[in-house]
Image (cartoon, rainbow, N blue to C red; front, side, top):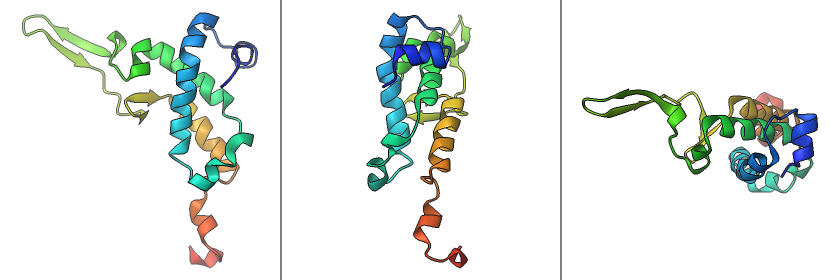
Length: 137
């Protein structure tokens, strides 16, 4: 979990403390589940040294921007693309460009930060780790 002081001072976040406190634990859980999707059980034991703070901050802002209902995987009023009154039909935005953990979308920039942190620390190089000889590629 990240501290509000990091969010405000290092990341330059704009949310007030009460909203941050509401979203932060959920954003941390979502990012933890997202990160776990890339790692083996053995790798999970060694990632404590990695820095995902900025990715979590981007996810916090993203979840707040999408509407707090997104925390529960709900569609929000910000997702509505159009409404028809005669048949009363809702049309929602297409969010297929996002990655998801359950029904919760992941910020594209948070995803990029996570993947970069994992890559530069050798966690996304599974094929290489499995090969004893580079000629095995």
